[in-house]
Image 1 (spheres, rainbow, N blue to C red):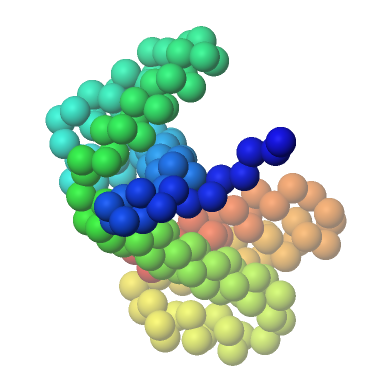
Image 2 (cartoon, rainbow, N blue to C red):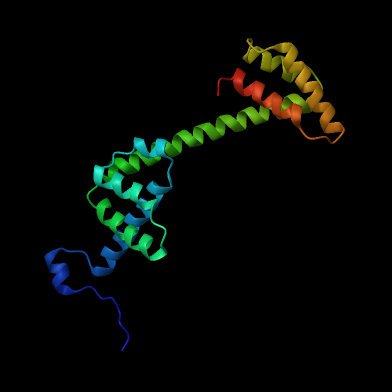
Length: 173
């Protein structure tokens, strides 16, 4: 006979979740624990974690054995049951939004750099200077000129990198 996980009528009557449901919840808590462990120390410090959870997370780095790590992750899942999951999830979402904001700002700066190098007219340059009047115009023009030259000669984009750095510093990112 094959074993099929049917809900136990006694469990349903008592309002308890089925064994399968408990296993799924435990795996989800372990996965959340893995995400917390994978975070940088600065990001992890922002999370509303109990001292027990912080200790369990720190302990993970010292475990080298595969089986030991597996058992420890079960323990992390158990400790996660006592944590404020809603607050942790809200912090995760805030961190993700900040990362998305940084990525968008970075891409915006990359587009400025590419437009400055690709555009032969002075319109893009003047638009950038109008947006950022504090930029060192001579250095900006020189880096654009050098980046165009490097691109034409198929050289490494050293000046394009310097131009991006100047744009980033000017935009305060």
